[in-house]
Image (tube, rainbow, N blue to C red; front, side, top):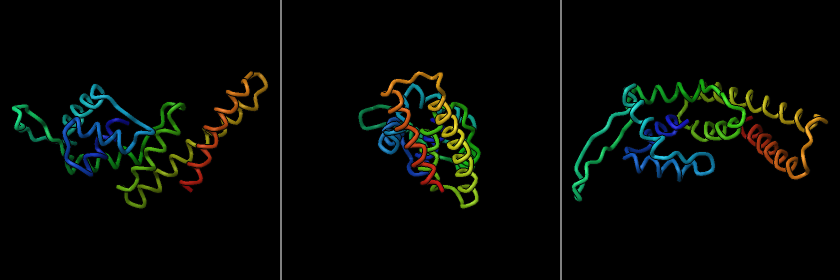
Length: 164
């Protein structure tokens, strides 16, 4: 998801690694806050894939900085990553689907349709599995645990409604 967020930020702005981190935190604070230790290798990978390029320059203080920008290939790659996103971890479905819906503004209508259907399918599976877990008499959840799970279930329902 870090690569997707980096590319999304770079579609909107040319930025240094620190600015990328700050913009991700500002725009996606509820869903993601990658460290520089996660952003830096992702940027290197994206450079290797020719998705981003950078310009180096010296600041007034004598520091060398790199300003990154997305390439035309990077824009196509980002759209491909978003529209065909593979949900791998059930614990991250709600979070990742929320991010993907938030950044869908860069997609064409047919790509959005594909993304939204993918998110809906995964959210509905998550809803069904969560409901089944709550109804399973062998899962001895405390009332507080049930309350937390139900609040997450409500968030899943809300996102499903938003997408439909």
